[in-house]
Length: 195
Ligand code: UDP
Image 1: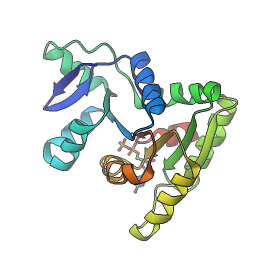
Image 2 (image 1 turned 30 degrees about the horizontal axis):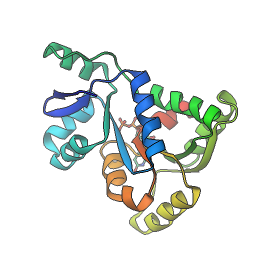
Image 3 (image 1 turned 180 degrees about the horizontal axis):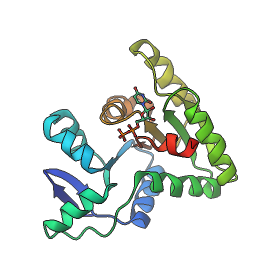
Image 4 (image 1 turned 180 degrees about the vertical axis):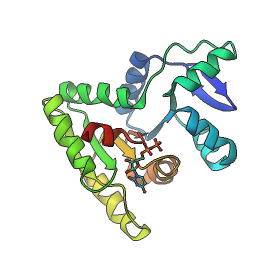
């Protein structure tokens, strides 16, 4: 895959089909990978948040989530095949889970939202394997228990919707401890799924 700079943030020039394949390879390889979904808001935030910028530039995959980043890349004469929305990537992965059994954990959103998103996903993707859910409102004291619970659920894919940049910082900080093959920052995806 080719990385393209948008305001010094490196974004992968991948199609949806390629992004799904890359995530499936990450699952097969069983290391700990972090996937970011970059939109204009995130790229702008990274201009004044060097920690976020560092996280994005070290991420294992950065998908072009927003029309703005696709436009900016093309404006600078880089070939960016298509927009790969984080929400759409999640839907593709849930459909794969229903077929291949991938274990998925939903972490984030207000109390009840991830649970509702799970109910919605189970109706839309019969057989989808959502192994656990947890809302995204917690204190530092709650973190050991959250991490333990996620570890016990052994997800292949950890979806974290805690907002930007909290989800990126939380996931990269705890990734090794969590020992999940793939963690993805998904913003407000659970809210959309919960309706
Ligand atoms: N959120 C959370 N914990 C927090 C703050 C936010 O779980 O401490 C959730 C919030 O409920 C919402 C998501 O993070 O589901 C942020 O959604 P938004 O669309 O604002 O995300 P963005 O992708 O724009 O950061």
